[in-house]
Amino acid sequence: MTTDELIRQLNKQKNSDIGEKRQPDKTKRKIKLNKKTIFWIVTGIAILHILFITIPLVLPNRGINLLGYANVIAIPNTQELDEELYQRVVTVHPFNIETIEEGDKVIVFGRYSTDAYWVETVVEIREELGEIDTSFDGFIRYTMQIEDLDFEFVRESSFIGVIYYTSSNLRGYLVMLSTHVLILGLTHYFFINEKKKK
Image 1 (cartoon, rainbow, N blue to C red):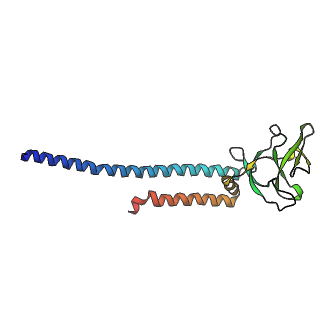
Image 2: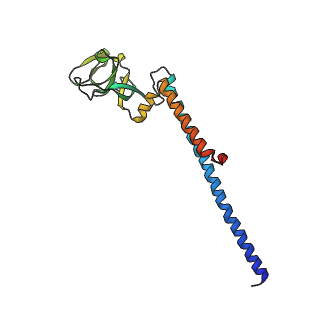
């Protein structure tokens, strides 16, 4: 090997080393860009969620959300009247006589002189008289005016439904809002600002 060939060989090695060193820097920069992008996407979703839970709080229609549902505390009719009764957060939607059938469940307010909602089963509908018969336990039947019913029972609420119910009052809403701000702030501080800290 001549001296010129040896110099050319060394130059090739230097150029290839530099190229290899530059590639990890580009990859590292790409990861940081992805963290920022993900953070702003999550921030956008959080803002949409806050708007979604703000609507039931400010509208006067008893917390009906954008999907036409609401969450209320009611006494389910899966219990016996002579036992200790418990309440659950249930998902409901506005009562509509055109979609209701016998066997469906409705929400009745103030049964047994209480200030609570009760889940009852529709026993009979007399639409021409404007009356509907419901029963909590399947034995005792109550006749009500159709216009006195506000909600139709959909299901017992999931954990997310309980959170929405909690955020439908001012104190719960403020807790939800501060939780969002705290989580996003800590995420931004520890993951997005790490370059500034270094």
